[in-house]
Image (cartoon, rainbow, N blue to C red; front, side, top):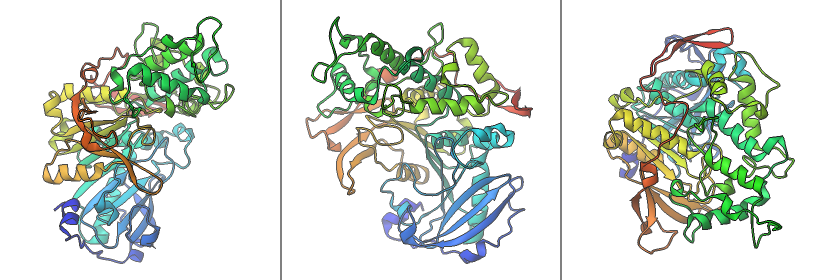
Amino acid sequence: ASAAALAASGTASGIAPAMSCAGVAGLDLASAVPGVPFEISSATELAASSNTLGNWAACDVKGVIAPQLHFEIKLPETGWQADYLQLGCGGLCGGATVTNAPASAGCVPLTSGAFAVASSDEGHQVGGGLFSTDPTLSVDFGYKSDHELVQAAKAIIKQYYGQAATHSYFDGCSQGGHQGLTEAQRYPTDFDGIIAGAPANNFTALNTFSHAWTAQSVYLDGGPATITNADLADLHKAVLKGCGAPADGIIADPLSCTWDPGTIQCKTGQTSTSDAYCLTADQVTTLRRIYAGPTDEHGRLLYPGYQLRGSELNWAGIITPATATGASGDISFVRETLRYQVFDSPQPALTYKDIKFTATYYKKVMGPNEGMYDATDPDLTAFKKAGGKLILWHGLGDQHIPAVGTMAYYKAVEKVMGGEAATETFARLFLLPGVAHCGGGQGPDTFDALTAITDWVTKGDAPDSLTTRSVDSSGNTTASRPVYPFPYYAENTTGGSATDASSYTPVKSTAEVGLKLDWLGSFRSGYETVGNWVGRKWVVTKGKN
């Protein structure tokens, strides 16, 4: 039975450990997983009161997989239901801590100790890009670390409990979403269910062209920022009005809004005020570029996405700086990838200003990284055949990773996997209005996809909706709203309270159905990468479209 079913029936007494926690530290499992050399460095008792995942005591195991992939596993001392959960990390990772699952709010099996839970640092410490100057560490971060961790973790679990885990799940957001899709594409039998939130799966183009485009748009011609954090509130109000947003201020279907910033450009001699907000010519240029996305000299997108209207309040500190002479987050995102991850040798002098938005430069950046950092293969045939289930989710107000890119990937999956009906038998995408990157923002952002994925895997109950909630600092729910599988969105068709999920019904988005992007790249179908490092360059020796 699934952990969710056992918890609901009140019979979740759990599987007891077959050995002491202290004994785990002395385990020699060097030969347990061929090809994955690892050692356990410590195993200590963790009190329930100190466990951020829930109120359950655990054996907290830490170790390292060669050459330096650090991991942590929390093994429940009571309540374990033979389930394993692996968590992703964020940004460029760099820390091995098991603290929270991003899409599991209110999941009773998790909070009661039904899952053994693990995570890793993806092979390096701290969050900068210097690790990518080492070929082995690049591979670990690019695609290998999670596959190795799941094997090592399962070996430890089997020893500790005297039996293997029955089901395995993955939950991650941002880079964690990228990790989840990497697993589904490259190692389709590792996990029974995967939750991939706001995936940075088109990693190379995202961290170069997408972030550099917004930075160069905000700092036009290398000058001071045309838009700062102080502009965002008034700008957002103008966007809501232009998009015809309801009274709750949340645009449910932002892809359908084509509001033009030029409609509020200041007239000759006019000065913008909070009562009569208007945009300078440079600000109009900036915003048009941000809403259009990075394009080459022929108007083709260099990243399959762009900022959606309604996301403006979430731009602070990422797309826009605090002051006109301050720095934005986008600048730092570009710096690490451009300097250390995309070229044959480190280029420490490069900045976002050096990115050229041309077809030639696109090939220069993307070519050396083929098969390394990206997880864009839409052919999930092997994952589906293995019985795998995938829940994708993305906040429509995401200021880091445009949600359009995930829509485009999902549509590519549909095309390869036989259409909408065939795809939704194993994969579904949920889009959260107003929600920023991996949470926050203006819309309800708290939800439990972990119960949904376990029910789908163990009982065949595909999620027709997820209920999202806004929660205040005291843990009280202040609003709720359903989200439906792509291409449907929730609309208040009943006239009920906008903060009550029961007021909403699903409506098909014609904009999402008709989404087509003129993108210079492509989602590769049936792509298989076989290659080797030659110096600092990853040379592909086999690959196909």
